[in-house]
Length: 180
Ligand code: S3P
Image (cartoon, rainbow, N blue to C red; front, side):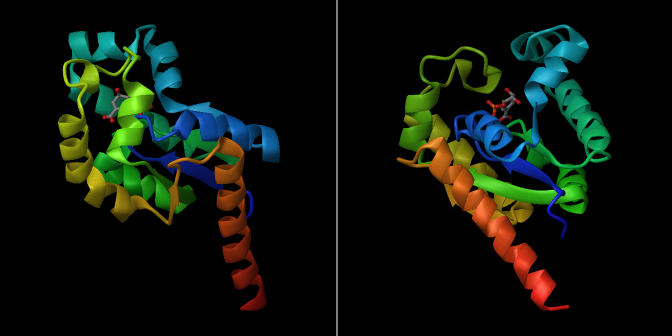
């Protein structure tokens, strides 16, 4: 690994990917990239409208294309969409070009974080704990397959989470150095 490899933040909606990405941008000077925002700008449409008018598959294709182009850059912190690791090809792209951090959160935490927002088409009609629990359980395997590290966000602030992420990467990097 190189210290300039991009950091990909993955995890369920409301796990804190965007907040942590902004915090990492401030603390270590990496440029933060919000995948959902890039897609909205590129399409000149909000995510709910893309889902409604073009369908989820179309959106997933845009995610893969965006990841491909981001993987050519270095030293970014990418806040992925909650569904980015659903495609195996996306996992391959991330693993090839950086380190993947799975931000975990309990369903109750997610519920509290998303209950008042209206920009997530998959949750719009399903804002309840049972649905969140079930979808999280269904996706767990994908997130774990993609992850180099798991970092919990329950009851923790962005700064503390950032510190843990940077420590884990530094630790791995040090190991590769001493092994040489
Ligand atoms: C999605 C998560 C969203 C957004 C889209 C689909 C998902 O991103 O990409 O609504 O499938 O989990 P956030 O995780 O940033 O909410």
